[in-house]
Amino acid sequence: MTYVSSILSTEVTHYVLVAHVKSKIILVSMVNYYLHSVTRSSEQTSKRYATVIAAFYRFLSTQNKFRSTDPGNYHTTVSNIDIKKWQIARKIKRVSTNSLRPHSATILEDATIVYTYFAWLIKHDFSTLVNVSYKNWIANFKSESLLNYVKKRAKVVLDVDPIRVLDRQSRQKRHKSLITDDEIKLLITSYPDTVYATLFCFELATALRPMELCEFPYVGKGPNRHIMPYDSMAKEQKKFEYTLVGKGSKPRTIHIPAYALSDIYKNYTEKEYPARKRKFKEKYGRPCSPDVLFLTKAGVPVTEKMISDATTYAVELAHKQDQSFRTTNNFYQARHWWPTMMMIQHRGKDLLNPISDVLDAAFAQVLVNQMGHGDIRTTYKHYLDFARVLVITQQGRLNDIITEEFNIHRQIEEFGKMSIQPPDGVDDEA
Image 1: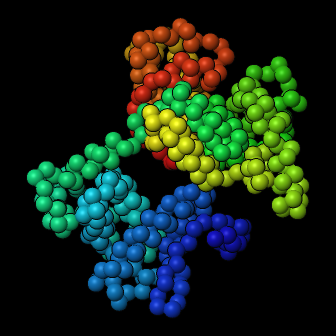
Image 2: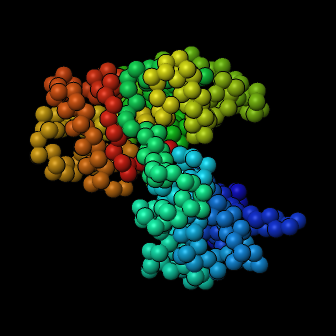
Image 3: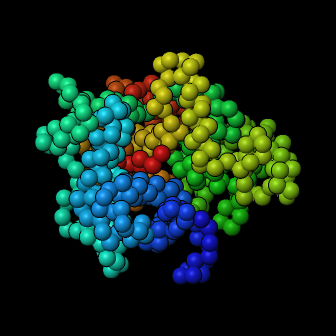
């Protein structure tokens, strides 16, 4: 929903929850107040939080305790035990259907979102029975007694514990490694539209988030007025600064290598953009704004969801063409390439030595700024470890890749054949 906030006196956008009560549709005010306060800076975050809280409220509506309570007042009756019951109910449903999802970790993550909502209510002096001082809202699925209870309710009678088996299988289904060079090449040729392949390569070279890629302009303005089609830019420069407003409405200035802008021009802007720009005018009745560069064949500005959908489709096509292509690959895997390869180039021969453990504050700041992260030490450590594994797997062949010009195409050729676990906890947004 988009509207002018009476509090901020400006236009805001966020998801809202509505409840169908008999013949009426009502806004769940307290949840919507929370979504306005916490998630209005990111549409994807708003969607995620709203979806999880809606699922929790749907569960509450099936419980006798809440049958006589208006959905708008659920928050006043919910306790820690209700959050825990929801987790257990999800696990029971998963086991009874012999499904791999949701994984136990996902169930806990969703419960944490709900718990955070109630913590916010308490902070703002709203009434609720949830006690944020106690952790009895967490369902411990490692507990034998709880696992036995789940098995009993799911009506599962097996000698081997089916719950742990399903969890292990689910983890195996998760993406375990970086996308390889062969997979990158196949995925790029499998996209139904050139624009998505161009965006994928652009992310490999910059580590921008998909939502940030979509906002990259044809011609920039203000601090980005030097951004324009590559044939009109200074050829002597090897990199260009680009200022953007990323996740959480945080402004930052990053560096974009000249070759990445050259790739966009050669593969998309020069060949595809003029016709798509005309399609845009035909469709919307107005010229395409210089703020917009990436358009589909139909002349529609590319969105983050369109990138995700196109990649899902391309992954399916790639897997049909080559059964070894992993269906767990996704667009966001490209984002891990830049920091890993930059770490390899920067640390050089010291990468495998203990000295690398000492935080290089200047380089780490460049790393987190380029990626838009907040935790400088965690980001540095994760990609340091990841880069080490890649180099070790390559038998320490560092000298071949230590060059002054960092180019993602060469890095893919050198390291793309590895199948290594990516760092946990860093940018799991996709």
